[in-house]
Length: 410
Image (cartoon, rainbow, N blue to C red):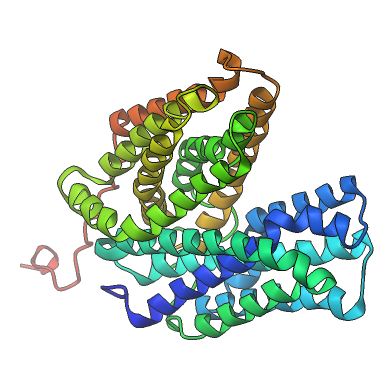
């Protein structure tokens, strides 16, 4: 097990940044491109987007029985290669029908899911507990850096490339695979033979922690999905895009500094104190989104900054605690957690968008999703702090050996 974030681990993080960029090059524009360029009807284009998102969230769950047979470096390389190669098929064969694209996007999303979860499992199994929080912090920065660059590149390239647009993410996925080939090669997805972890359904502790931290992703959706709809009638889309740019820049710039501070806090107060602090900051950021439709709407930039710093705290902390609870079965744990978190994020985004989008003016119904999500975050923080830790089972007493004095005949 590595005691520090080594050069091979940096290669894995860099490949994750490129994988994130490749995914977000096309993902935000997928429905528009399918409809405007290929003529796919809007309902089918929307279905394709849903299939892509669901496969990206859940693909690693049903692929874990295959993944266990390989080292995690091979999972990363294979995932990125498949994700890129499958995007070439409809371009080369000029497939424009919706059925072909549904199949392509399902395979692409599944491959991306395996690479994403594989990277988290690589950190969980390849870093010791002292360096794991910092490594997950750097992973968060890598993901957000790619997620910030991807839509910018996609927005510029979609109209310029036309039908060849999928070649762009395919090329970036190939570069991600090249970097992933330099990742640590000695880390496996299999749990230790002596442990109780098994592939299939993760342990009760993993499932419970996935459900507890699902409130974080429900709250995250209020920023990513609900806030643009809430503010759409008050400000221009350029202002809204600046919020996401602020979010990505702050994460890339301050993740290392915040991770070091949180490591110090974890040593003094425990990792529960770290994630509880992140939840409190998250609630504060959500409350600051409320003035977004009124004359005080610039306050949302302060809210975006507070929200971002909360993400710098709770995202690595949630992953680090999950890695410990996984007890070596990291791929299965993060696979199921990704599914639970994805469902929470989708539900939070759908419900919040319906409420905020269905209201007019500065009414309480418009900003109620932010306050509900903030209240859930605070209640979760309180539960995390107050619920007693599970006590480790006492180690069994060693059985006396035949040469033990108590067994020697007098």
